[in-house]
Length: 211
Image (cartoon, rainbow, N blue to C red; front, side, top):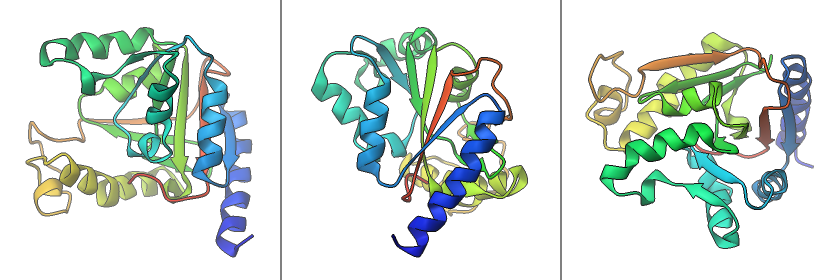
């Protein structure tokens, strides 16, 4: 095991213990291939599934695997007609499983997410029966303040470029703390505890995933 892999495993162990105290379930997978197997094992065939915008769940191959199996009801706004998107987003709240990543996670087990529309963070908070998160160890921060700083300096600019947003982070790569209607930082949510135990499942992956 490389030094980095050992470091990730030790950090993940610390985080998982903290998640348990916060009534969330943590898991650690050394590779994205193992993370894919674990995620699929959590989702029974026949489940209804939706997801928030996430490069991490794409990078481990989770969406492709769900479509290939063909045994789920998938609420995919990317495949919906423009007139169907709003209804598709609303259906997400009634899904059996909601898939996403977290923009950052602290060593203390707090989840930090910044969102534009708010559909991703709202579904995380309430609605779907289970939430499964795929989180690369590149997103681990010491505390909430560091996590927010990381998101604004690293995650939002790259997402802004990817989504071709007309915002300072999307056009020049640096956060301008803007109030632009196209802003992706409308909502900042810190999840420090889960009222319903066994609802939120965080799969930590010993690789760099997403932004």
